[in-house]
Amino acid sequence: MDSAVTDSAGTPPEPDPRADDEPPTASPGSDGDANENESETTEESGTTEEKEEETGSSDADADADTPRKRHWLRWTALGTSVVVLAAAGVGWWFYQKLDGNITTDTTAAAELRTYEKERPRPIAVDAKNILLIGSDTRAGAGNGKYGRDDGGSQRSDTTILLHLAADRQSATAVSLPRDLMVEIPSCLTSEGRRSKEQSAQFNWAFQFGGTACSIRTVEKLTGIRIDHYMVIDFSGFKDMVDAVDGVDVCLKKPVDDVDAHLKLPAGKQTLSGEEALGFVRARKTIGDGSDTERMERQQQFLGSLVRKVQSNGVLLNPTRLYPVLDAATKSLTTDPGLNTLKDLYDLARGLRNVPTEKVQFMTVPRQPYVNDPNRDELVQPDAGRLFSQLRKDEPVSIAPPGEKENTQRDEGRSGTDEKPDGPGASDATATPSFPGTNAAAGLCE
Image (cartoon, rainbow, N blue to C red; front, side):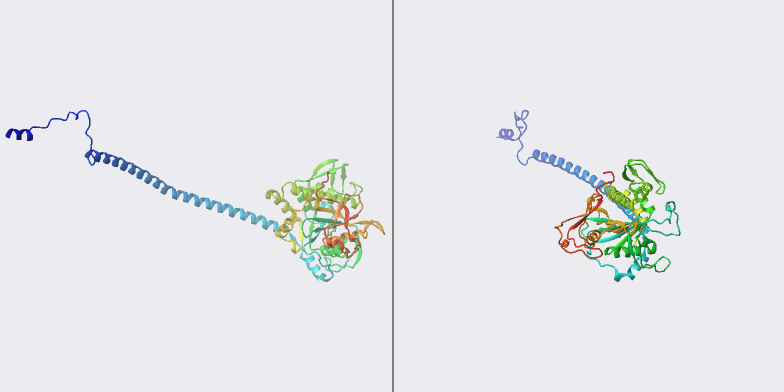
């Protein structure tokens, strides 16, 4: 019994023969399983800590960058504001300078108000009629070399009636000869006296009573209400040509005109402002020497100038547009309705889409004056027909120079069924066509 007890309790158990060959299989919930889980947990914990450290580092960097970004944005905004304000300031300075260049003629406006009852009434309200006057005054800087300044007296060297259609799809410029015999009304002179009503050549009206007298003379002659006017002098014309880098012309023969200060070879060439002024003023050495030929040359030159302005990007390029505007505004004297840069811009904006072939130039129909072949008189009923069409804002067309005035039926406007009215009006019901040119045709074509 003792032996059995001793054997069962005191004898150590025999070793398991598999102990050295196979590891013991851990049962669920065993220490091995726990250790393995603990190891995995430790690894995951370490990974989480690493992530937290990385995230913490990223957040710290972002926190550090935020003030720098905000600082940079503030400086950028400040810099942009300074640039915008500087640009606005420069723009405002340019605007004020150009605006201040324009001279306003309030005297003419007051004189016209005095005679308001006798002036024609507008028929086509949205159409505009502007009288453009090229002054031949010798007063002022740079003008003395074109003749003696006899106390500031002046005459209208060139006068053009510019009609802008109400739809702004066409513009018609009609030259009025300086030697045209007309009835000039009694006008207020620069000395404060009244001139007598008289028959005289047209450009004397400007000498008698300035712009107001010219306007009243044109209105009496044509029956057309003049809405605005512009007077430009020699220097202004030259500066505008220079501002667009000159205008191309073609000459069949060389020119040497002492009176016009012009000496040019034959062929194609680009005229500077000084040369261009001589070109449009010359009478004795270009063509037949007549005022008729000179006006045609002026019209062709103005057409080339318009085309140059539209073709070389002047209107869309501020650096090229400013010199043109500066030259134009310095030389302009206008009525109070066109005496600001905004007024002139609105006028130009309405014309920028007019096709060059619809910018037409012509001369009022005239012939040698019966009492003096060195003067002109209107040809009727042709002149009356032209005035009637413009007065009612009805179309006119042009034919190449040398062709006689003719008429074409106009089926597009009912207004042509009406009889022309006003001074020298004709009974014709067709659209008249007159010799002339347009801005699409250059001097070298």
